Image (tube, rainbow, N blue to C red):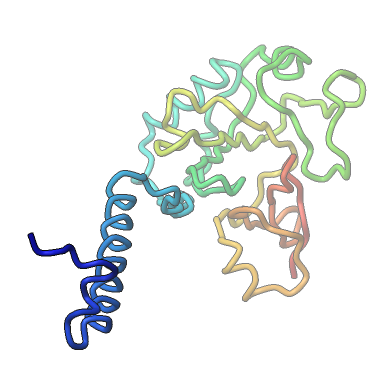
Amino acid sequence: MTGQIRGNPWQTIPGGRNVYRKLLMWLSLACALMTACQRTDVEPSTTSATPPPAKAPTYTRGPQPTEAELRDAVKRTYEDVVSIDTARPNPFIVGDFNGDNSEDVAVVVKAGKGKLSELNSEYANWILEDVHEDQPPDRKNRHLRPSISGNDVLLAVIHGHERDGWRNAMARQTYLLKNAVGEPFEKQSPKQMSTSSKSLPVLKGDVIREKLDGTSGIIFWTGARYAWHPVS
C-alpha cells in the first residue's frame, strides 16, 4: 500500500503554496460577504427617516358674508342682548385679527332694548373692553370694568374656529369693544401696514384701520386683548 503524504499536500504541487494562500483568501472574503448579507436581512435598521415638520395652515378668506350668516353668528354668541347696527351701509369686516389662521368677523352692534344690565354683567360670556384703556379690564371687579350705556355703538369681534372660521358653530370666543367704531372702516394686513406706516406696535394679525374722533389709527390684537394705536 502506498504511504500517505505527510504535511501540506499543496507543497507537492509546483506553485501550490501560492495557490493555497489565494484560495484561503477568497474563501475568507466569501464568508465575510455572506455574513454581512445575513445581518442585513435579519437585523432591522435602527435608523428611521425624520418626518417633515407640520406645515402651518394658511389663512384663506371665506365667501362674502350674507346678512343671514351675520345675524346667526351674533345670535349664537350674544343671543338677543345685541343686534346688528343696520344704520351703517357696511356694518361688518372680516379678517384674521388674532393671527391664528382662522377667519374672524367684526360686526357693529348696539344694545338690545332693555339689555344693558346683561351687557354689563360680570357673568357675561363675552369679554368687554375699551380699546383706549392702557390695561386690560378686571373682570372680577365690576367697578373697574368699562360700562356700556344705551347710546354706545359697539364692535363685536367673533374669533374663528378652525377651517370654517367665525361660521363654525364652535366659534364662541368673542370680544365686545367700546369706543372702537369709526370711519372709514377697513381691514389691512401687517404687510400693508408696514409699507404705509413706520411707527407700529407688534402686529400679530390683520388690523382694523379707521378714524376715531378725527384721529387715524388701528385696532389690533396685542396677544391678550384689543387696543387702539394712532397711525399717521
